[in-house]
Length: 123
Image (cartoon, rainbow, N blue to C red):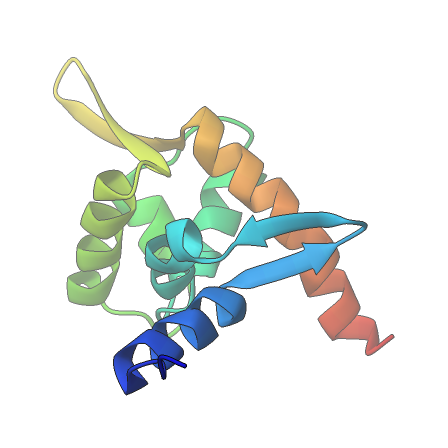
């Protein structure tokens, strides 16, 4: 009988750990890890909320004003990260810069809503 190597065992365990079963369907967590890490960063969900709440787009100063106690440095950094992650896009209209959610960003925002409501009610 051939014994599994410790690395094989760990890989099998990891494969099981990265899968979430729901209603008979398996979903792998791995493709989501980058976006989940980004969403978990300070002010990211607030930025997604602020831009989405406006219905279309917001400029940097509007976003900064709408997020209390934030700094321009961190908001600027998060906006760049959200662009790289494909959740928002930067729009330059006649020298005026604004930001809007991409279709993907809108879907992420909508998917977060039930989770946030659950966390708010605790049920």
